[in-house]
Image (cartoon, rainbow, N blue to C red; front, side, top):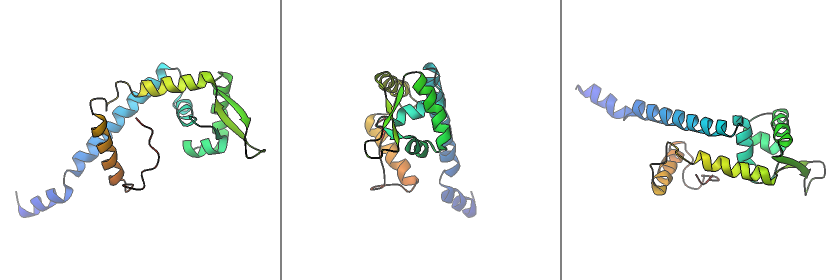
Length: 155
């Protein structure tokens, strides 16, 4: 191997391989998530809304978390409301706003969803410590290392 080839290989330091592995893991995690969501006859957006409603939120807050417009959230929440999973209640601090609150059935479905997503995951073979280390390295790679980690979903 020439000096130039060695230098190029060292500079890349397995970049293509890492990119490929991260992409493959992302695809496997996505496929796993889609299959678990389908088991519960939910759409991906309904599942994400259920995940995010562990604590009450307004439609605007939920739209921000889901990265969509409030009218889209209204449509999703209306479907969940018809299924008895969500109710709209007056906001305790803002009389103009309504909070989206899971019903008992909605809380049970949310827990079932979270359990299913954590079962037979592509990361199951990793110990808790290995998953934490992977998370820390991914956060560091994304420039969100120590002190900027935000909330964890616990999975």
